[in-house]
Image (cartoon, rainbow, N blue to C red; front, side):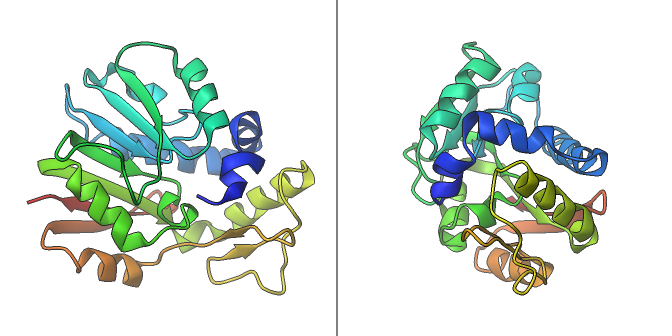
Length: 224
């Protein structure tokens, strides 16, 4: 991740981002979590890439397995430990998605939602390769990006974040085609169907590409 999510949109400021979400964006965020949880079986060990302050992991505590969250932002990880509690099933560590400091084949499910694969600013093939490395055979990798159908709501959400002083103004002369660019250098890209298909095609595993709630585009890879 770049310095934006490491410091500028970390911890309490990141919480504020989600507090500003409109009802439609809140629906999108909830549907992403439900999509992942629907694929977690009781006792599964789960890893989230880019966990932030633990927003998505906390509802998964009842899954029965161990939950791990990785993030580059130390302030966000500190808040995650407080937000999720210090219960034994949840663990957090500072590392990047493209170089996981984790053992091979340790997880049943790995996921990175809310466009994390774009937000990490890392090589996307490397992120997928590392995620597959830490999955058991038969394990699932779930990665999501924004659907083009939620563009207007997404743009409005970023406007609210700008007005709250969380980021720079949107540069509308360069914003479009799924990419939001702010005057302070912040860029939020997306991955479309063609790129997801191209990425998945580099690996010899079965995969599904599907849309959820007219808001999220999910790539699901099942490790052979």
